[in-house]
Image 1 (cartoon, rainbow, N blue to C red):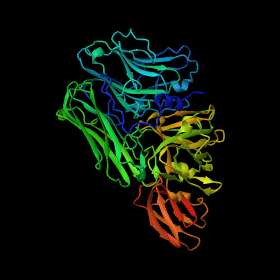
Image 2 (image 1 turned 90 degrees about the horizontal axis):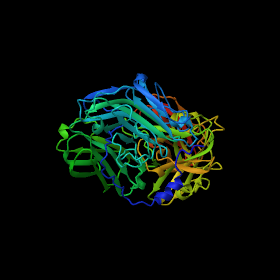
Image 3 (image 1 turned 135 degrees about the vertical axis):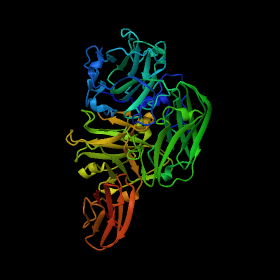
Length: 625
């Protein structure tokens, strides 16, 4: 079996402890690197940075030369339309600017290499590029990538088309000025993939200064080189060589963490917020000339941070990191804009990389690491994990997500984000775990667990399901004292007949411990470093007796254009709540016999209508058109 993640216990032993860190985030140091990552969003850059000297969009495979040096391993770069990884953990296909006319892919995951032999695959321009008139040049390309363990992605430049270095993941490239590591998350703190080894956008645009080795050269060849043993998938598209801009300062990243440990939660109950936020960003000079009197800012309209430096020369960076106090936050979304100002900002070549956005939501009951549905437009990057991910783990795979509990919290159930590929009839078993147990590969000793829940088509259509903790048909709850816990779900598909997949949010790089998988086949837990959509819910109304007990309720029409009628079989005191797909109550009312509600003000989509009395409840899924 392929171990898709490093064992969480082994990493925890190396790191000391995942949860004993100080309440500050270590500031990334400035580094003399030629990697100058582009843009502030995972959307495509609007327009070229400088003059485009050469470009290739992979619409013609004949412009590239593919070489496979894998000692019999059936793996090589592919160029075509609609290419997708075929391995056990699929990396989403690239959503590049010209994906419709083709792109390149090397699918190590699908090669299933268990030989122990390093794979080495290269993709090289078939013809040389003339840069003789241009001393300062940048190569830009869009890519999508996820790293497993020790594999490495390289960009290599040659001026004779013959002399190419032999590379493996551990090659010392310090004396190779023509070799550049890409997504070098273990060695380069400036790399935006440094926490999880995954591109932080789909696509993610990389820009690398190749002036020292390619500037002014009459013949230049470009090579993409992947090497490793059974990794994931690397996609590349829309390669350009451009003149380097005179002035180009960019905001490289931004983060907001209420825990101070690097975890960035998408939804936080108000009673779990501590009094400070750890916030920060990195600004990098990508242009030829210095920027002077640089001021970096992070501001969401309620609280902010700011810092300054006298000068940022190419290719240096400036890091802003502060613990800042904040006022009491009411329920709602908070979008922090990280930006900069400098003496040369008006001369900057592009405004598209001058900001980085990060959003979190303060809620009443829902605690989620993921921010699915709340990310700024163009940022969201999702995949999923489930019973169809591993051919030998169709039943019993356990997924878990970490939660830091600031104040005692009573959990009544879990909300689980579901992939549209899920099939009705699949079973989810919810549970809560002490972090120490999971770190020791024990997911069979929960501190709280609920009865199995059978997924319905309505749940799949909703995109998520609220699962109350039930024990032998009765509702239960679990109170967690301050500390760190994993919310978990075990998935069962009846041997693959009813697959179920949980959404996995790649948008925000998370620490390695933030989520993970326990594979029942080897009894080992592996880290994921993303945000699996397994959310804790502290809404006590989830603890009402099971949902079908209240009889005689009729909710119509369904779907509705906005007007919704609710009738009861007998007179009584009924409370009505309308919940969105996040489990948040967005409308309430009361009635004795019947009620008409107007939901036309709400966005089209799926909602749950919960009708309850003092001791019973009925829930109806409705669609608003």
